[in-house]
Image (cartoon, rainbow, N blue to C red; front, side, top):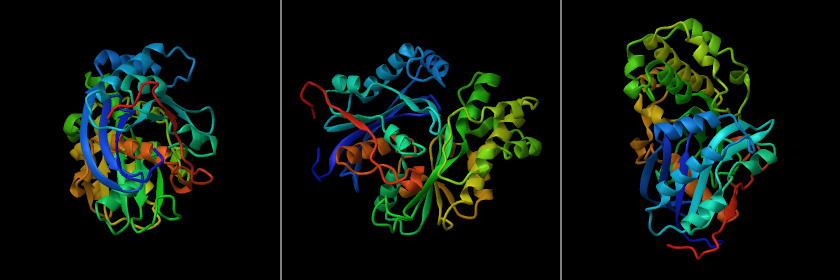
Length: 369
């Protein structure tokens, strides 16, 4: 795997929204993207979501057998039907993230997955970065740099991921490589869909506010928004990262609001967090390309369009797949790990120097594909 040619890699991502496992193929040499391949999605059942929710915030050794079984089974099923793959990138399910304290915890067994798949598996992407003083997140920025190159972009651009947590990657596509000084700046902006989804589950028994339908009926409560922005996180300089539940206070701030106003206010909180975060960009981007579930929320997208001084578009505007971008990222990063290339840098996680994360588990059986 130390060669220099393009190979087909398969990436898997199970995000903090706890909706399921995305899987996607990328043809890459770990630097450039030659092509994107097939993709798939394996949703979590309600019972599986309940098991994973109960495991949130837990660390290794804290009774996670049932959650591990869910993660492993879902990934084996999600990755089973892809042909011609030479390498798998397995992110696992983030349960806890405390980079300046206990570290970061992505539940999953890459060695067991390698045996199940009959393929080498790259996993545990974040630990090395955290061990060297980095935040361990976000990890998609190196892939965002490659996407900007693939799309032929020539001016600085922001990739905005609105998953469970929001994060921004500012990319200068004129840079020679992603670890170069000034090529990237990345950081978590604040909560995005996770607390809003929790609200919908608590109030309406729904997984999320589909199409922003509930938020559209309400109005943003300015007082709650102002209290939200008093959080010390917003005064920290990037790089910086969050755990899924770091902003659990959001539910308390909207506790007295009716359902529609609560949804509108939490949507406004997520959008405002992005606007505050954009102030850190080295230069204004030519456009903001949005990925993740938040791009499907027209209320969220309208708030961003009004609040930012550049076009705000889904990543599909440049030919990318916003549902699969993070899974594709871990396919790309897996090839970088296999070839000894860095996967994070001071501008993306605050790590002291460019570092390659991840460990590789190879099956005892001969690889297939």
